Amino acid sequence: MQFLYYPDTFSQITLKGEEHKYLFKVRRTKPEEEIKIRNLKDDYLYIYKVNHINKKEAFLTLKEKILFPNKPSKHFHLGWCIIDPKNIEKTLPSLNEIGVSKISFIYCDFSQKNFKLKNERIKKILINSNQQCGRSDFMEIEILNSSKEFFQKYPDFTAIDFDGEKIDCSKEYPKPFLIGPEGGFSKEEKQYFKNKLKFESFILRSETAACAVAAKFLL
Image (cartoon, rainbow, N blue to C red; front, side):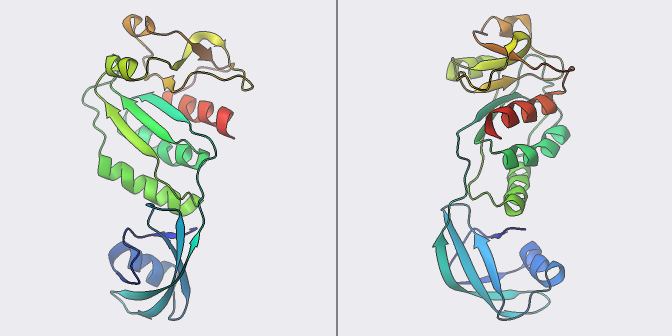
C-alpha cells in the first residue's frame, strides 16, 4: 500500500474502523512511526506520526505535507455500455491503474436495465485501488441513462466495433472511446458512428476491450 486514504487531513486525526485495523493488525504499527496519508482532494502527501495506538483507535499528529501529485499524464475518457456490475467492479482497479481519467457508464440498447451501479461501492473500489497504485486523484465517474444521451453530450467519439479500421496509436482519435455491452451495438446506435476502430484479435469481452483500448493509448 502506497498511502492510507483519509478524507480529513487535520493537524491531529484519530483513526478507527478499517483504517485502524490496517495500521494495528496488518502493518503492526507502533508509536513514533510515520504514516503516509492522502485525502484525494489535493496533490499533497501528508506525513503523520503515530502518537498512540490501542486496540480500537490510533492517534496521529501531522508532521509535514509534501506537494506530490501522482496523476495520469494524459486525459483518457472511456464510454462504457453497462454490463454486469460484478464484471465492472472487477475491472475498475485495472482501468484506474492504467490511468483512465473518466468513465461514462451508459445504458445502451443492449444493456440490461436491471443492472444497477452503486456509487458508494465504486468509490470504495477506487479508493482501495489508489492506495495500492499510488494515484493521487479520483477517476471521474458519470452514469448516463441512454446511448442517445451519450451521443448528444459527446457527439465526437470513437467507437470500438468489429467493422472499424485498425488502431494506429500514432494517430489522434476523437474522444471518448466507446465500448459496447456483450451484445454489441444496435443498428440505431451504429447510425451515430462516424469514427470506428477495431482490434486485430479474437472477439473480446466488453471488460477486456475496455482495458485493451486504455492500455494501447496510455501505456
